[in-house]
Amino acid sequence: MQEIEYDHFPKQYMVVPASSKAITLDLKTDVNKIGYINGAGDKIPESLRAVGIEVEMLDADQISLEKLNNYASVVMGIRAFNVNESLPFKNKILWEYVAQGGTLLIQYNTSRGLKTNEIAPLNLRLSRDRVTDENAAVTILDGKHLLLNHPNKISSKDFEGWVQERGLYFPNQWHDDFKPLLRMNDPGENPKDGALLSADYGKGKIVYTGLSFFRLLPAGVPGAYRLFFNLIAPKNERK
Image (cartoon, rainbow, N blue to C red; front, side):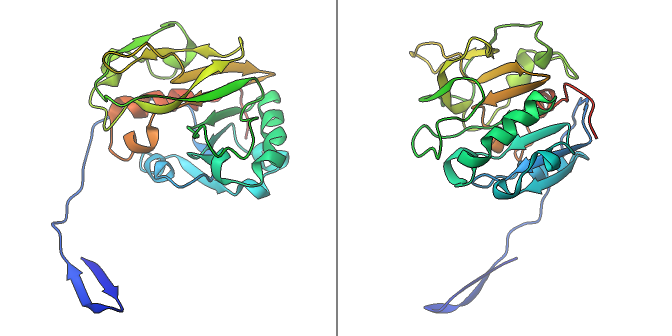
């Protein structure tokens, strides 16, 4: 029951049927705890907790290398580089965390309104490229890449049942160390390779993705869960 109350009309109550969604997951995990840096707001932390992952929320203006080193993997919330005023002064800490062996997953940012253009330790430029057809064909560019094999073997079946879109604001320029892993496009448009990029950096790894995990995980899309856990799998053992 939802209560609706405003000054200009009487209090009302909206009653909707109670329901919950259950899914079955063939899911392997290689991480028990992650740090999550707040962005514009999403429900990925709740989605990860639902499958047993401990998620500790981190304010961007309070991050330090000492804090980040408590986590084998750190995830940045959606549009973090669009909304956090402190990230232009904190991003070097993120890069050092990766260089020392951490895994950093950066989720999508919009190409306009960035607080800094340095959104990765290697050159990376965002565009307005997107794939709005959630059923658009996905081509795996490197089937042997670790991110597509560990701890879950990713195949074309993992891109079935997606919701609303494939992703948005894909990069269209990147450093040679970044490896594109997926190719996709809307009908009648040119193929786009910027949906998922990964690079080794120092002792760690950095992943940038424009895939819409912020919609897919709350919707309970099994393949999205499997791929997401591959992206946050630690490269090195930490606390």
